[in-house]
Image (spheres, rainbow, N blue to C red):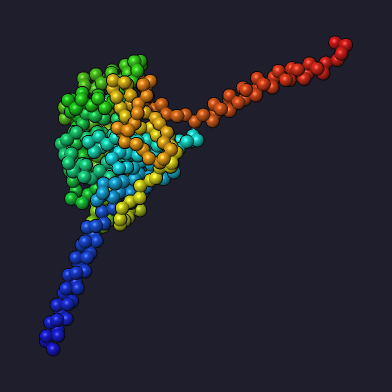
Length: 357
């Protein structure tokens, strides 16, 4: 009898031990999650924050931490998204033209450099854990402003404090000015033709050097609320404060809800067979190239080495995207009809005149 009881006890202990291991393994494997993020930015003037947001967006974020994949899919704009896509970034902007339009952009030292500031800030908070863990005291592009137009985003080192080892981002982080980085960052800016824009950027560059000192805080990030989900800590409330020439100038406030752990690999967006591609991976300072545009018909974005540049390639700035030509077409059709109908009208009414005249 005692022998039977011992066997039963041992079996029970083994079952409990196996169940505990199973729970631990499941918790460790649950490294993917989704959440709905709201982001608003406000201007600050003389320490008074505007009541109305300067910018706002809502996005559904899906992150696969294990495979370093992520998708930022905009809820308030069902066309727009950005995601990791093989060895580059795939981005679909808002567009109302006839052709499907996508952007391919590079990952520079692990950073999605050509995304908009809101996409980079959401990426920083929810998708960049492995990248940020390696960047303590190192250069990190500021997740604000335009990386190809604004000089100041390239002049910072990140100093971060982490809440725990399972956080998706630092609890606090400052972006501190470094003059050497700022001067080197000019190589990341877009090539521009001579003119007022380039002159203004040069003035901004020189003023920034003159009125900033090494170690000065340019921006500060902090998480104020966390949620624990399947062995992960996810921010549910956070903000980024930006200081322009030492003055508090912007506040970006983010919140997250509907946070859920998911299993398995995430599904990346698909590209239609026929699509217009703006490829920002193709950059050449000598040719003043910021990007090239081409049409694909097989649903595949080519490798950079397979892209053939035209001999007539010139400054192809990435802001000069294909416009919506519907209005232009209507105007031209109207003009065509007017020029075609007017002679007929003169001829018709001329024939109706009385014969004695």
